[in-house]
Length: 475
Length: 100
Ligand SMILES: Cc1cc2nc3c(=O)[nH]c(=O)nc-3n(C[C@H](O)[C@H](O)[C@H](O)COP(=O)(O)OP(=O)(O)OC[C@H]3O[C@@H](n4cnc5c(N)ncnc54)[C@H](O)[C@@H]3O)c2cc1C
Ligand code: FES
Image (cartoon, rainbow over all chains, first blue to last red; front, side, top):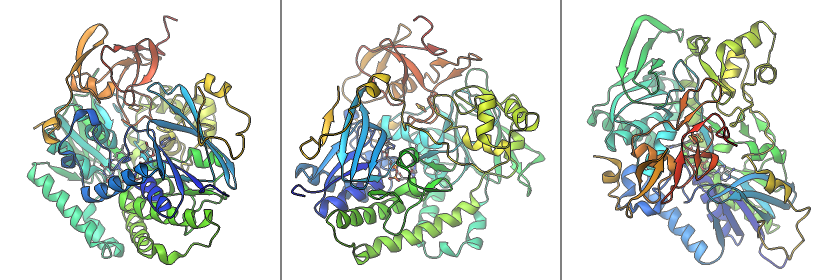
């Protein structure tokens, strides 16, 4: 090979950035593709440049780390080692063993096709939020916790004046504090777990004093903004006709069901809700990578079981930005060595490997704590919409399961159309599985994004070898 | 405090777009969804079946709840599409193709 080997990184969040930087530093030519207009991913999402934010760090944590990543990216881009293709939505990655084509759409309407060929691929596609249905969850004003955060960080906007932040998981804390700092009145933070149980449960916590300090910092911020925290509580209903007006919150008993008489109504125009996160695995699945549960399976070097394909960050399991950075760094080092035809030396990523172990143990402990309350399916009334796209109700899903004998989400889907709409089951998948009483497994989707037929029709047969430009505009 | 003040933002000059013919002020850099939120609008679509109102849900392009018609093009994800001066935004009924 006369040219430098070429790596395509999908996703410019903490994992993809760390991977791109490590590989570029080790002599690999990198093309970094991301759907967003700016690098950063979810954790380091930046206000749009035209908004002229002079103090974006007010919306952020670990700003120094971001500055380091951003400056290093700028240096590599300036030196021509990394090409950052922003506003590129990857819908499919094809190939194996050193010859990959990454297909993306670009332009505001995503109607133009682009193909990038590469010797190796790093999937750093992150994840999205899981929200379990409850009566009223389709009302405007009900948004995902991460979505509220994303709109705030990226567009400097709030959905309303008075918010309730609810669900379960560590993401609720930054969301509540950021909304409050940005001027929303946060009427309550409603967490179904009891985080006070954590220190008793998790030895992994002791290894992460930084995380404990972070937790304490959030607690202080919530106090400062006068945010009332209700643990072991859950939202049982969102009220309103055309827009959210209030939520009913219930105290949970030991069995995960609301206690009788333990409800209260909180007026609000915004409900930011989330029940944990799910990895984006579509691209990995199309490539044939094996999943374990909902996560892309990787080895110690972050390699998937498809030669030439690495994965890092939340695509391989939910664990926050620090874990994403560590995994991305390891992947980048491993990729560089492998592409140069040498055996990677794990000593070159020893610190990242230690951070990875600690973070994974910590999040495994959090996971057992922050699981949605066991009684959640019983809170969903028959007329509650479960599949938001196709407007399939819990009653229809229950009929498919109870009367028609469906025992898995696939059959429910065929009988009811739940999961057949625009989002392809990304939103309703976990709920349908829960209502059907089985484990959630990601549905196989041929494309990670909807693709205009025109783009599919124009697909070339094969990339001409060697001489082909790395980026070919197909329009 | 509001988000613009918190981030000490000095946005470029605001411009006007229309939502169902009504003028709405938008800031450069915002998405269609962000501009509508800033204008106090949280729903801009009604569902195909029950005709229920919808707006932003996931905020990152995954759920497709925020579909809207922009400059004649139906089913655009408002949370991803940048707003541009003069955009004609039309709330969408059903698939947004009823007039086709
Ligand atoms: C909406 C949302 C908001 C969040 N906010 C916070 C927060 O404020 N604080 C916090 O601690 N944690 C937050 N998280 C958790 C966050 O996911 C992790 O902490 C961290 O960002 C994970 O890093 P990552 O690199 O694995 O993935 P991400 O940061 O999610 O980065 C993945 C990147 O891949 C891109 N991508 C994915 N698929 C494609 C594709 N097909 N084509 C092109 N690009 C693609 C995305 O645009 C994104 O930039 C949030 C999560 C979500 C879903
Ligand atoms: S809000 Fe989910 S796609 Fe726009």
